[in-house]
Amino acid sequence: MTEMPKIDSVDIELPDGRLFVGGVWEEGTGAEITSIFPADGSVNRVLKGASREDGLRAIERAKAAQADPAWCGLKPHERARHLHRIADGIEANAERIARIQTRDTGKTLRETRALAASAAGTFRYFAAALETTDDALTARRGDALTMSVYEPLGLIAAITPWNSPIASDAQKVAPALAAGNAVLLKPASWSPLVSLELARIVEESGLPKGLFSVLPGAGREIGNLLVEHPDIAKVSFTGGTETGRMLARQAAEKLMPVSLELGGKSPTIVFADADIEQALAGVLYGIFSSTGQSCIAGSRLFVERSIYDAFVTRLVAATKALKVGHPHASETQVAPLVHPSHRDGVARMVSDAVAAGAKVLCGGTAPEGADYEGGAYYLPTILAGVTNDAQICREEVFGPVLVVLPFDGEEDLIAQANDNAYGLACGIWTRDFPKSWRIGRAITTGTVWVNIYKQFSISTPFGGEKDSGTGREKGREGIHAYMAQKSFYVDLTGAPLPWAAAQVAS
Ligand code: NAD
Image (tube, rainbow, N blue to C red):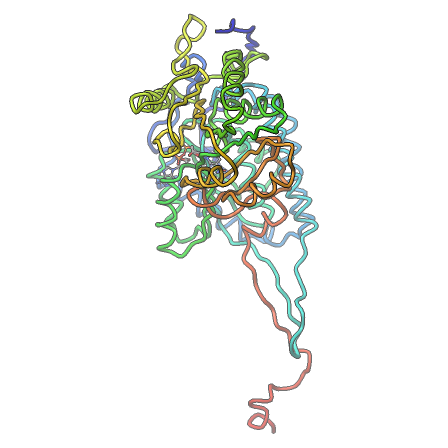
């Protein structure tokens, strides 16, 4: 175990816990929510979440604001200015946002600073995309001018998980506002504070009141209301597969579009011809950064059999050398998990795997010592000795747990990698580019990384296949996901349609 690094303990004032209900700061009237600092279990804030009544008020205010010409009458470049002002606010408050998110989630400051910067970039990207998105004249096949235009859907519910709130919030809020909608954001109950801070920044940016709400609260109360309410035109959801499946069923009832960014059990693949140092660093980062609490975590590692023993030996040694520690310490690589109950769930999945025959190569327990007391820590863990059909290879752990598996040749690899309900991401390490192309094309997945992992760009679409979800976020088309397409036919002849021309001739 490594020594606990020095801790930077600058104090910040946290949001006071009131909700942002259609542009008005109000105490919630729903079930109580407790945000804790997972590094030591101390309480950040106890707040009342949003009730159905709070949600209904937010919806009424959002409807009025969305229909107001002060918003719906804006030209794209005018709406883009609002997004730039929100980005300015995020940049000006980036350190505060990072520290609030670290308190809410236990993520390292290094990571939350990067997430704040990426959130600002997301607003700027969609401002630019909005200004450069064209309606289309379509090819004429008759005597009418034909056009395809895009219009806002109206009210969007954005439902987000706790693992990277400011980034996942921005990924939905920016394109939905750019598209001219109003947005009701429901963050997860473990991480309400950073989304409430985003509300403060949006308010200060001068966005018309009512267009944005932040409604933390119980999924079955406020979440349900947002999905079922007839005035909500689309739900954009990021979270667990079972929750997503349930929302999709509810959405089907009112024929509402949903986009679903769900879980993963992503394969990372190391061929014998890979640059081994590059592969080791990529595999470690892919699974253990963010303490494994990442939908795209590379949690199933396939290593070509001829290098399996040597590679796994080096991987285990490097994993044991990772710095597990306080999220405020600059050297920390593996911070606590989001909550003690989540840490206990991860520990349970590991002990179930061991009971089913898995061998622990490293980790498999919480770190010991006074520095870790009260914190939701768990050591980076590598398991071996199971086959791809074991439960631990099938289920998402959402923690720092990697399963290693050998493979023999491309056919065996592709069969094993695809034999899983999820299809979110995949990493391939090889020096043979045509091989990486063949494998990447053969694996059912939303994203392929070759000799690199967990790198994101807002300009590149992201989403999953199979149980990892439907729809894509990011990219220029990200705005159209929040718009309705309308077709226009405009007569060019000035004459009555021939079919009834005789009857209408005077
Ligand atoms: P979760 O499904 O428990 O919750 C996600 C959100 O849904 C929360 O805001 C929650 O309160 C809300 N919710 C729960 N029940 C609801 C209901 N009945 N109606 C409406 N809303 C409801 O997920 P989580 O534990 O917060 O997050 C972890 C999961 O998110 C993991 O499975 C992870 O893979 C997934 N995730 C996916 C992506 C992606 O882009 N694919 C990104 C991050 C996280």
